[in-house]
Structures are given as C-alpha cells and as structure tokens.
Image (cartoon, rainbow, N blue to C red; front, side, top):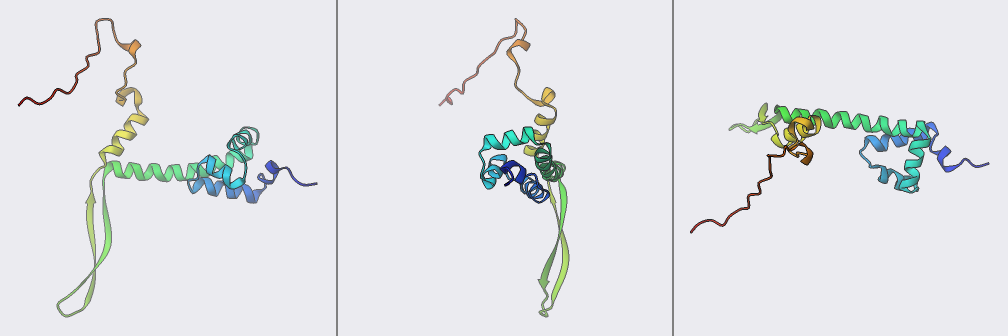
Length: 146
C-alpha cells in the first residue's frame, strides 16, 4: 500500500529537505509549490503533523538568527578588513590588508526599535489614548511664497 502524501513528507530524508528549504529562505508558499500541494494543505499539515512543523521551524530559526546578527552588526557599524594588492614601480605585486569603516545603518536601527519596542518607538497613537482636550491638527504643505 502506498504511503499517503503527508506521510511521504514525514520521512527523515524529506524532513531534512524541508528544513533545508526553510533555511534557504523559501516561503511557505514556495515550499508548498515544490511539494506539489496547495498552500492550505501545507498549513493543515503544519497544524496536524508536529514533525513537519518542527522541521520548518528549525530551518527558519537558523536563517533568522543569521539575519538578526547581520542586522545588529549593521546597526552598530563595523570595520571591514579585506586583502588588496598593488604593483610597485619595480613591477612586484605586493599584498596588504586594507580596512574601511561601515557606519551604523540608521534605517535598520529604526526598524529594529519599532519592532522590538513598539510601545516606545512606534509613532502610531490609538485614538482612545487621546484625552478629550487633545485634538488632531492637520498641517498641509502650503505653497511657497513668491
């Protein structure tokens, strides 16, 4: 008797494949297409097969940590060192190390803060939070005076 399609994806080999796809950054929809199933079936299997959802979760965690580390590095700024070569007057090739400073990425910092500490850094204010005597003032851009 043939295995059901879901059970075929629960073999150790296929779970490793799923984990790899998730680690490579494929979306759930892209994985479903590779598996030749609908996105809704994919989510049904995520809910009904713990091994299936764990493999995908494990794969996504790896890349999420790597991306998080790179975002944090870009927020702080860093020094990048790389190998260079130059040719002397005599025609000799000389290798040396060169460094350059990569300044902090403020866009990444804002993104990080708004997502990690939304209560403090998200500018959206819920209408119920406004007191009665507070109002909303809308300022339109006025044409420049001539």
